[in-house]
Amino acid sequence: MPNDALIMPYISSANIACGAHAGDIATMQTTVASAIEHGVAIGAHPGFNDKQHFGRTEMQLSSAEIYALITEQVFALQKIAANMGTRLKHVKPHGALYNMSARDPQLAATIAKAVYDVDAALVLFGLSGSCSLTEARKTGLQIAAEVFADRSYQDDGSLTPRSQPGALITDTATSMQQVLQMVRDSVVTSINGNQVKIQADTICIHGDGAHALDFAKALYHTLETASIGIGKK
Image 1 (tube, rainbow, N blue to C red):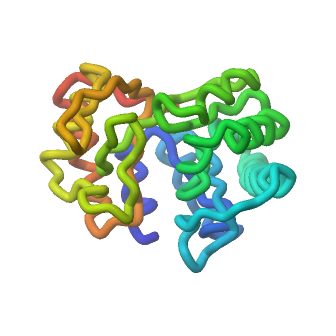
Image 2: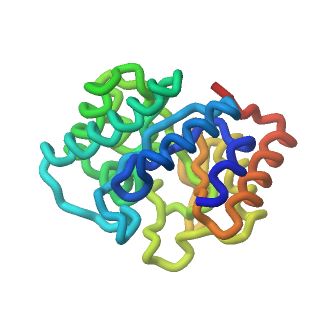
């Protein structure tokens, strides 16, 4: 993505595609180099092996297949990082895999075990309040509860599916208001207008949007103006 390098000064952690839903060795190397340059923590972003749908279509795989899917991708980025003199700090599943693991304890447990077996010191990013984080804790992993700046929420704390109206928040001011509410008040206003408890350890933004750079800048300056620290590694 053309915005990847440009966004780096405005983020603290980068989720790097590992060759399944997107990316290849060259893009991983380039992105790791950019993250090193800007002091950004490096994380693996494993997804379903489905470039056609960018990993956003659900796939039904066995636990063994999920385990292999995660370990192969995380190992691939881990090797590149090591060869470049750095290390991975976290793992965040991508797309449909992320959303499925948020509601499926068995899938979440398989992902957590795979991450733990690669490196028990890795932090697992997961949807705030989801079983992704519950299962990761059971495994012994450190966790980071993730919230979304540009997605709307359901009453149960899940993200509104992209197939439904209003799933994406396209107004920057509305996104910034939501972020401040989540960080300051530990709640988010659902798409139905209800207050839902939430924990915000890390905020997700997407690098593939048409206005990704402007959005990253707006979020960075919103947090800075509100005296909310953005933790670099």
